Image 1: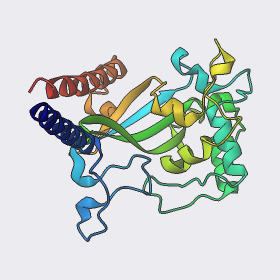
Image 2: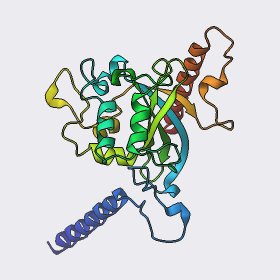
Image 3: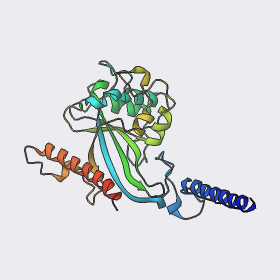
Image 4: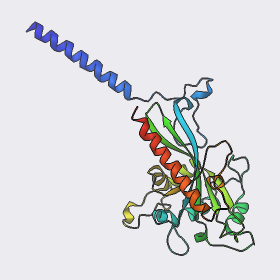
Length: 269
């Protein structure tokens, strides 16, 4: 009996030790250590993801465009001719109320005043007023990366960019309306009870914009990725060809499939 009791005690201790090891293994170790090592720093200005530079095994910048007119993106576009409840109108409202700060450049060195932003928003190249429904491009820049600490692929969005389409801008070319830090956008709209990704099939399941972006509930096209020339994909094709736009789109898809293949190959090592 004594031998049996001793064996049971040893077994229990071993089980507790193994369980504790498993718990420790699951706890994140990627935390800011407060030291001077720049690789231990996290991006707390633009990013909503707590990832140390040291934990990024692979990273590439990707610039994407959401066309709100596409069927998959209609929950972001809003309703009716005025596009009420849409993401563009809600961003305008947040700027006008002083809750969201717009910038003139992607480096965020020049803040836009409300008057300047409204001029960019409502007036095209010829000085004509436009409608919200004519502003259907929402661009954003993100980092596609692999977090080696958690062994996860992450999409780390840095900023949003409202763009006036060339057709809306009197065919004078696209024009930037304003840039927004993604963290500002994320934190503001997660607490906004009115601004929602609209579920037209079940209105009780409309969700805040931050959740919609986290769940990737949009269809986007890659316009640029990190390259030596800092060139758009459209600039990488021969524009003299009659199907240049299609070639650019195919190159965009090729890049997308390349990311998927990279992720797939990662787990075949």
